[in-house]
Picture 1 (cartoon, one colour):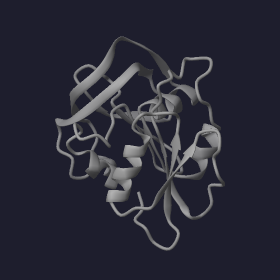
Picture 2 (picture 1 turned 45 degrees about the horizontal axis):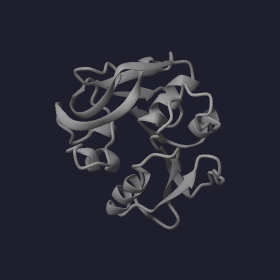
Picture 3 (picture 1 turned 120 degrees about the vertical axis):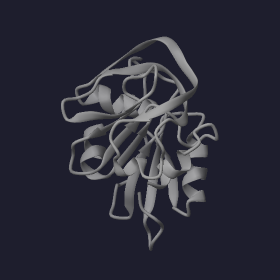
Picture 4 (picture 1 turned 90 degrees about the vertical axis):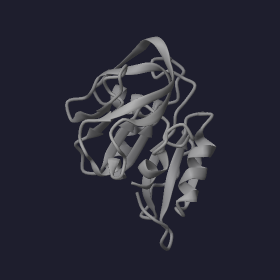
Length: 187
């Protein structure tokens, strides 16, 4: 992501997550300017917006009334970090599959990094992360690859092959229980 320089900012799209304000706080602790916008009030993604973070949500992407955005436009315009619901939304809407989990995945897990992408700089294998979701990504779109798993989740993190960097993560880097979460947000 980018550091604050004359007008650079991170835009956080809020899908109703209880953690959206905490994501913003963590980004600001890194001395990066950010603004939160509701998913249905997206401002122009001008040159001052360096990246977009898609928040989690209490909804399932499978719900008829789930929050929706023009994800193709966002992905084609800016680098994206999609967190939990955001990751599921990206996968679900560009050719992947999301299904209800056999059991709600909530709590600590150890991240197994399969590919040392820049998003995982300074993050050791088996780093502790915090899961909180009832759905899981069961198949990725053709232009995506798994870059991290956990013991119970085959797609804990993925990367899209696209013009802009796009990462989806099924865990919450902004919470204290994700021990290297701040490093991930900085990356």
